Length: 588
Image (cartoon, rainbow, N blue to C red; front, side, top):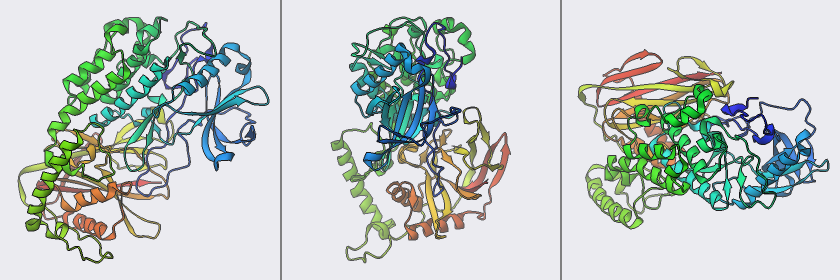
């Protein structure tokens, strides 16, 4: 019997219900003002032929709105807590023949015990539990409004800074569960939710403890031998039906880290026929082969987590997460000039760009020096932005700085390459491909923009649209706090990838401005800072007009761009020290 996401029942003697309900991909973050369909982070593609729970009120409190997913042991529903202003919750119900199976009931109760014991911000919280009038046990959990890591991972891999941000959180959450004697046994990208935080950032939330091993369980200490888990992330000792420890979950962490870095799992699913031999052979394709910008120390740490013997791996999930995170960001810190790193982390800003910064005292000292130096220079070069009088009228908009880049002929052609990674709304798990953007997309299709520059510089991507009132509206697509560490600076030969967006709302045309420049562009730097404080939207009318004027004056200039599209990738070339490209995408 096969389950979604590559999970397979590998022990015919074990209860099929040991595999917890599978959850699928959720909607991506919204694009500008495009509304998202009202969907959830759980799959609703599998439904019972007759489901009398939908539309009912459980225990006089939880109104069941719709089915979210279904697994071997029962079903998962979106509910509304009538006692808490219809707060959305997830209700998991053990139903059908499994509600009378003693072992399945024990595992269900142990999941409740695991969630109750492993209380941590990085683990989904349990809110209530009980038994329905028909005798079916149920669990009420937090509804996490976010996406799964499975959906976030793209073929090119995630930005190293974001991987560091996520893997550290993952290790901390797992360590909290391990400290309570709880081992997940089915850690994988589909069981890791990414919950957006207010303003910026995201919180890792580990879900689905349906087959977790609970030491000193108050429910039952009975252990049934069997290979439970998902092949792609299952540790060798799980495959051999040996003792499961913290190192088993750390192996899964290593496999997930490999996939976040490279965009693919460490092992080919076709090799599962000879899984034992595959474990002994180890990882055939080193991460740096697929991701040359990966620091060597980070590769060594990821491979250490994938060691054949548990004793050769890290023994603490938090130690592994912290070590790998530090190795991933150490090189990037050195590659960012201190001045621009400081500008991306201003004192008093509510945006948290990185969890891996130097001590605040050092930052404050450096920032003070930078601000003083910038202030002296500003009087000569940018008085309107830094030298305003205190008596200015509060009704006035901030003045728009003039461009810091003077259009001049470059000594050689500058070029950038862009393409789209598309994930169709239908058959989402198997329908990811590259596109030049020339076709017409369907509502619900998700996409990410990839850009590669041949020279170092600064990259900005903005979506231009209109509000319901018909006013011009811009949304900052790149950089964001989660992409580029909030900085527009781009290294040569490095591919950046925007966050995932989804077409929705009325059919029409979306416009994206792609700008590369040898030096930072004043209007767009200010737009970036303003957008960070408003969830990516640029609402200041005067500043939006200034940005629009910049695009208008630099698009179709005296030095026209040369374009060529090969294999869905478009190369844009120009002879000036900036490139401005308008990308238009049609959707219906």
